[in-house]
Length: 273
Image (cartoon, rainbow, N blue to C red; front, side, top):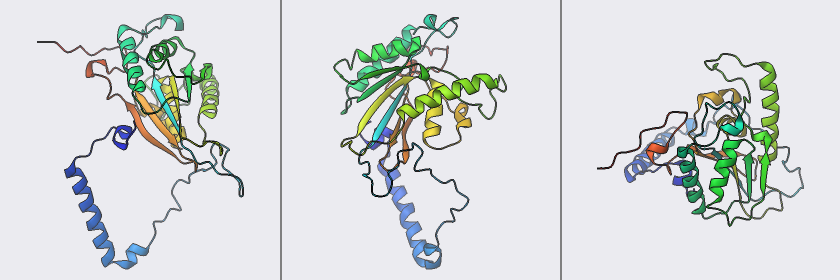
């Protein structure tokens, strides 16, 4: 994720770039012929306003301003035994362990080193994190285990899931807990932070989807409209100004096709000839 194409998971061909440039030139030519339209600004009165003080850390007038960017790297745990009754029994499968090892090796190739490591206290996240650590064992970043990162129902999704409306008590309990984790992890850099930082968080699909929407100030009830594969990577960048951008969501390009899983089903491994 050290360049724009890796961040976005995109690769633009020369034809794509030329076509894009052609559209821009055509737009400029039309605007030039209609100066009135070119000078007229878009009406933003009905558009969503960005809350620049969403983290409560926006500098006041005269105070020093942040200069660095904080990158939050969110990794879902690997494939695990969903049919088990208790959390200690919901351990990674052989597929999940293989996924975690691949992600760990990929993180080790990055031009940056994690500044802080966060991990959910649930078994499948702990096991995933341990396997990732095998590749980044030389990292001296502090490790924080957060029970607030445990899987749950952060808010009522719209439209409803197949199970229908959630129970209010559970949503309020899980939502308060997950919001607490968000507050601890997501915020802009301090004014005295000189370099960009990368915090790696190993947790769960519901939590990551909710985090992404909340950080982007999008309706959080849409979290169930998205999907995340096991050991997929999501990256958000928190700029010094307080704006937040999504660099990649649910990226699985480092995993071979037969290791891209979302639930109990496991794709058939490729046959050798």
